[in-house]
Length: 341
Image 1 (tube, rainbow, N blue to C red):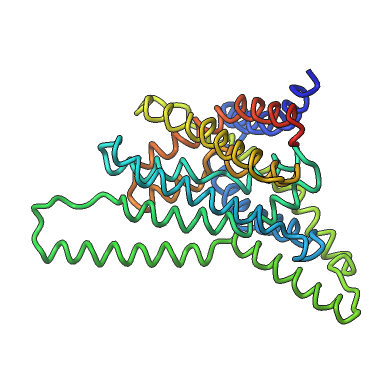
Image 2 (cartoon, rainbow, N blue to C red; image 1 turned 135 degrees about the horizontal axis):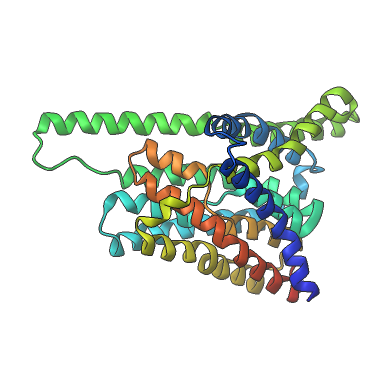
């Protein structure tokens, strides 16, 4: 029973806040416009500040567990590669393939994953998860571009060569635009600024200069307060954007893909991590955040922009978030029983 209670305490608070957002939308307290603006604020302002703050809280680069970094990145790439090869064998519609592959490897790491790691392993879980975000977030985005670009729906074969060349140029332009978008990704900016700040602080320490952001109290307090707002607001907005009606289309595909995302993939990755690696509880909690979190909300936005099946991508966001609740309780309970967290 204590193990189940521990697992519930790690997951239920997040689910309750998401449910609050959905309930507020249903009673028209939160409008679509508010949810859209809130989502933009979380993505472009609050999450970068939070990632910066979380990474800045680590002591130095020497505290990085590079084996954890390599395992996390290799695991994400492995899931992507398997999906890239296997999904086309079972899914006939090309427009759906990109959305499915993206769902398999791309988690809602920044909004749900990092708070989840903190719930499981406390402050050390938050720090490790934030540090892994420096590597996981760019990996997610780069692989998403590769996936959606490769599985873009082609024009009918009856078009003439000139039209095909025009379409090819258009696709190349879209790819360049998307890659530029990755370079401009606010989450990556927050991570990089945090790493730079830690590096500069380490140089100061080597030269006997003791200076931290906390020495400038009014800035440090502002950053801390904004970071504290991020998770509740992000989860409320996430709940407000839920649309259960999207489940009706391609229900079988949604169910099968969600089971792989929420159950099979995390089970395989965590078994490998637990059996072959001597990771700390904070690292295990961060791996739960990477491999067992629901698919990222931004995956649906990117799917729409790159001409994949956006309706299916939105269905994955809803289904994986719902299924993640009971699955995370089970996963955390098992890990707790095995004293891995």
